[in-house]
Image (cartoon, rainbow, N blue to C red; front, top):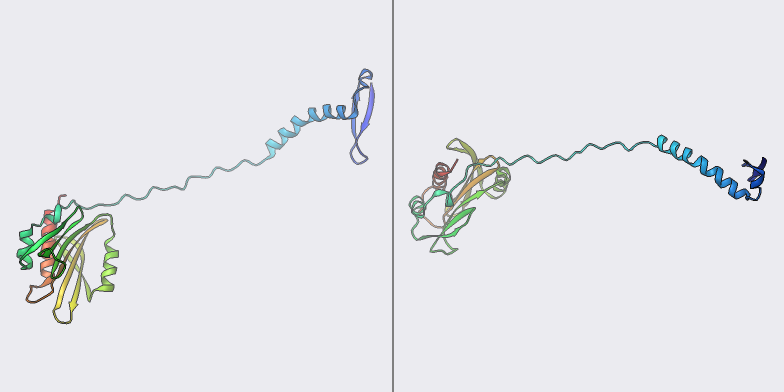
Length: 205
C-alpha cells in the first residue's frame, strides 16, 4: 500500500490505496473519500436542522345572522288600509318589491308619500344614527313587544309632517315612513306606529 498526501498546507487529506492503483490521480482518490463521507454529513445536517413548527389555524367562521320573522309583501298592509289610515285619496302603489312598497298620490313624485321597507341582515343601529343626524328628533319606541326608534321631521310651515318608525328583529328591521306635504293631515307618528303594529301582527314567525 502507498500513502498519498493531497491538498494545501492548511487542509491535508490522506488517501491510502493499493500499489496497483497508483495510476489513479490524487483528485480521483479524493473523490472516493468525499463520497464516502458525504452521507454522514447529510445525515448530521438533517438531524440538526430545526423542524418547522406547525401553525394552528386561526380561521374562524363568522357568526350566523339572527334573522327575524318573514314579512308578507308590503308588510301585509293593503292599499285600502294605507289610504284609510293616512286619510289621503288617490294613492297608488308604485313599487312592490321583495324589500318594500311605496304609495304616492296619482303615482307622482310630488305630494305626500308613504313607504314600507324590510331591511334583512342590516343593523338597525346604523339607521338610527343616520336619523339622529337628519331628523329633528329621535325617540325610543316599543311596539308589540319589539323595540325600535321613531324619527320625527318638522317643516317650518307644516310642523311635524314626517315620521319614520323602525323596529328591530335580531339582525333585521322594518321601517314605515309617513310624510305629508299639505294640511290638514293626522298625526304622522300615530299613522306610522299603527302601520308598523299591523305589519308586526301580519309577520310569519
